[in-house]
Amino acid sequence: MKVLVVEDDRKVAGFIEQGLKEEGHVVDVAADGDEATMLAHVYEYDLILLDVVIPRKNGFQVAAELRREGRTTPILMLTSRDATEDVIRGLDAGADDYLAKPFRFDELLARMRALTRRGGAARAELLKAGPVELDRLRHSASVSGRPLDLTPKEFQLLEYFLLHRDEVVRRTTLLEKVWDMHFDPESNVVDVHVGNLRRKLHEAAGATLIHTVRGVGFTLRNADAPDG
Image (cartoon, rainbow, N blue to C red; front, side):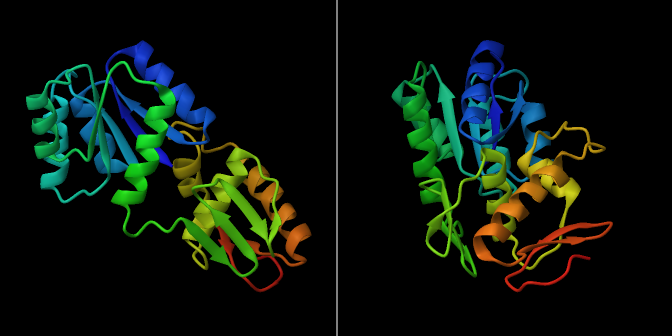
């Protein structure tokens, strides 16, 4: 998932960011409410982890603003303020769930999984294209029922391609969705990882499933066809 962490405590933000990245998620961090709303306007996130006590706009204000604009991204509020009135205020502002600090990281992950299942009516947990199948909950992929051994980045790439099958996906889009938003756009990291994923899929399926659209990006199609 692409997650926005809104937390002004650098130590806490770093702990959450590192943990989520180790789980294979793409993470952006905002240190105040203004930066949080700016990022939420620019990028499409699967989940927002939102601290209440942050500079400029507080978490209640950020959540309320995003909901007024019609943004439905699941919001999990993280705060040491666990009084009942604060919980009610956060939920009324538009948060989907509330987790008091300090918390165990495995509980945070469980809450995130529950929110994305609950908040994503349009979120399919099982993605398929021809012989390729990807289970987003179990974090597993297979071709014709045989397990596919993928790195975390290859898994994220395949997930994005399956969500946008038959579409042409630009390299810049993959950099934003699968890598950090500040990643060097001149790097060939996308081509290298897509090439590795394409090779693994070809070996497992006996056909080319990911095709290069020269000068633009890539597309996932079921039928074998020459690149270009």
